[in-house]
Length: 69
Image (cartoon, rainbow, N blue to C red; front, side):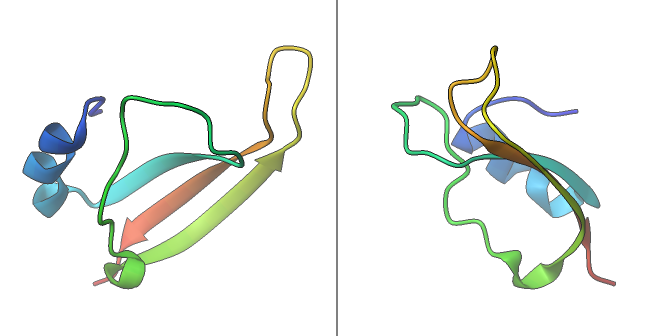
């Protein structure tokens, strides 16, 4: 599992085969972004959308991506 900023993601992405991505459906202020991410080499396996609830300010989706062979 990798949690980090753009430098950390760039370092490990060539070796990643699967990504568990959380998409926040808003544009809140943040200090960590996954920049310049090219989806063309990835296949979306699943997506679960969740509406904002008592503990969540914004709706979000859990997305599972696998690298294309």
